[in-house]
Image (cartoon, rainbow, N blue to C red; front, side, top):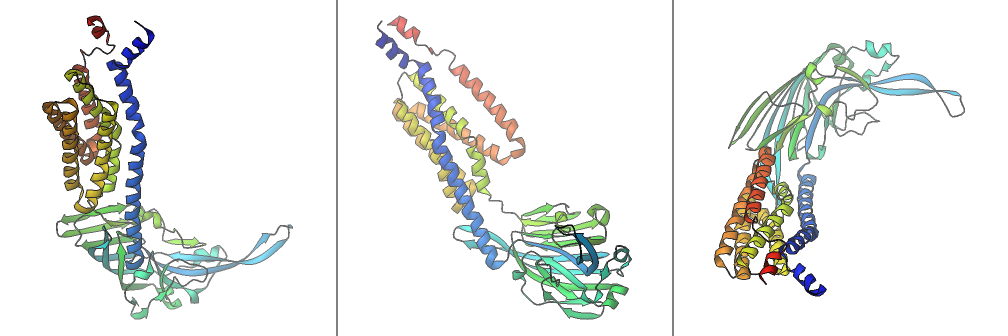
Length: 446
């Protein structure tokens, strides 16, 4: 046999075709990457829609405080670059946290549309009640600070004050005062509201009560600033996702909404009631907790997870077509495998496009049926065997059903995926047990 004839015979062996399919599977990772980029781009558009709605309606809201803040000053020395001592006035802030804090939030949720995207927003009415003990200045004086009692303020930090919908008053003891913009301290740019507190109220302690009507987007969080903090929240949103460092001690969730209650004692909060700070940023914000208005149609994450199985999916379908090709005895050109691979990749784009308009479940059903039907009909034409095409279409639908199961039961995804992979490999090994990979048998017969 001539060298060219041997090489030609090698190219026609099942083993060589198997290697070509492996290379083709790897090459298809290039368009698969483009599909990844499309999914990421659409998800980025979704985040932009949430951001744009938030700018106009009200951003994600987080409340910190209320704090009783007293500016502190002391004369101190420091060395300049020439080694000379210079005196300057050091400014700090004495921060008192409330002894008790009760927060009640009523949240009316709705969805706003930005193009094809739905953004969960809410109107909230938040009521604060609590009391401060008499402010003990002895700690500050021991550190040579001079309290500026005339500049003391009661301040609440709010992440997006533009969403406050009404000027509101605060009841301090028996005195009603109107909140002012900002936190009331010259050197602090924290976002919030404040009201002046008299030295007499500082010395005796006082109860407080106020109400804030605030809009927001996506989530609402609070800080457990009280020595004993109680927060209750009720809403008509049926899909709450409780977030932050503390879960509710009591909750009720139904199709008509939810109710939740939190109780956070000072010991769980892990911080004392009196602080000295240079600024107000991140005083206790690592302790935030609250609710996110969860959207159960988070299909971008589901599509991204489905794409992780794409390479294994393509390889499995190629092997099935290859086995049918061997058993039928009718060769399938590698270009035809490319078309099958592209059909499997288009599935994800069809799924994403339909999910943005009809939801993930309907989109997944339509995309999987359409793709299975397309590949089944094409394979039946390529192999000249309608029965084989129908069989492949049924297998594809079964695999798509398995993929859907993997996406929905995330806790068991590894177990289901590994067992499914094992049994599929076992089936493929059994079906190819008699394949003459080298092609020697056909040579002997010739």
